[in-house]
Image 1: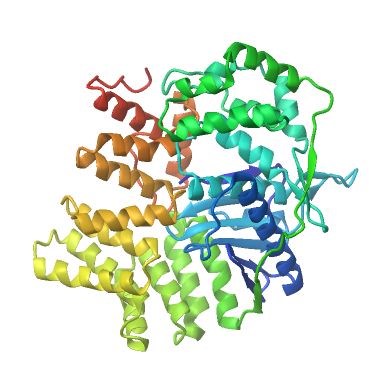
Image 2: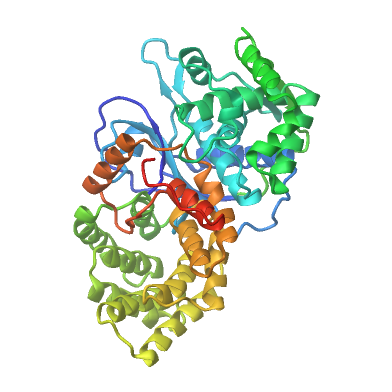
Length: 522
């Protein structure tokens, strides 16, 4: 599972969560906090304003309704944030991820400050805005942008500060990126901006540090903005990364200009006034005891549950939900936790309770169906009547909640898990799910594999490219370390991937061009 972590160093101890939670909902966010409702509303207002500034700067079309909103969990401090992860991380200020449960982020309400000076060392808001920029780009501009621009733009935009009188401070200095530029050797931009999968070798941090200063340089003048706009237009028109570099003219001269800019003692920032900037409608409520009891559980489900701890987690959920078994949300969470633990009978029992409360319950139909599918797969069943019946439940669930990606994926996998190429209806459902949560990487890879199975190689490449080009090449040592960690802290729903996204891209490009793919590690 890909998860974006901001890591700091220090001793992490578990801290008990407070029981009382508040919930805020706005155009783009559903946020939870165990602080005051007033504080929660202010934080959501700030997030919405940032999102609207970002939309204005990029010219993106604003949706009237967002089908899948980002869940934000605001916890008291870094200690609680680190404790929400399923494994020891050494110290985490905050993190963001998109899973089949949707996009979410867990952040502290406090910045990390230097104990001696009182100055902020790490800003949770800046980290969150960086990741929201990534989310925004995937949602509104799902092109295969190169990693230097993906990370550089997110750093440049993520540092925005919005004052109380709606002035957005853009282009603020990032000391950590400047320090990296001073410390590391400069990577020629013609290589950084046009990396060759499997061949280009340079530190991945260059995508961030040099990406940031390059974007900063381009945004510092009208001429630079025009060049960047032309560059992005070329990429969206289908030009290769190498051909699109023509937008910058002489690339070696451009390299020298950016490098000189990186050595300036001061770089320009600007304040842009948005007099009509508002957060839009925000509703805030204090949650009931039943709803409060579920917040921490659902946050941990999104964060990940280890295979080794799934049974214990299900026992905990069973205890928490026991007083609320007439509550549909409690039964939904219980059915989910039991299935994660492999407790099929218990998950089915919770699903049946849901269907008793509401015979048309979409979640009741979903959990009954996926447990039935597990049983049919285990039995290698060829009973088409049984398969049709369980798919009918999924169709009913999708009709009731058409924007729930888990339903669409389960419908698709009711075919693919049998080794059968899914029909067009299932393929369309899967594609819709990816449209809803484009940053869910396992879902993207599943769509890529579907296209490849149908011989749609260019479609597979186009779908994979935003993921593959957004990742740096991985050394064999780094790959071994990642696989060792994954084996030690394997999460429920983790899938064994025979190849990384970059390896898959190299293979698909070779397949498209009728060439043999290079051996792994070459």
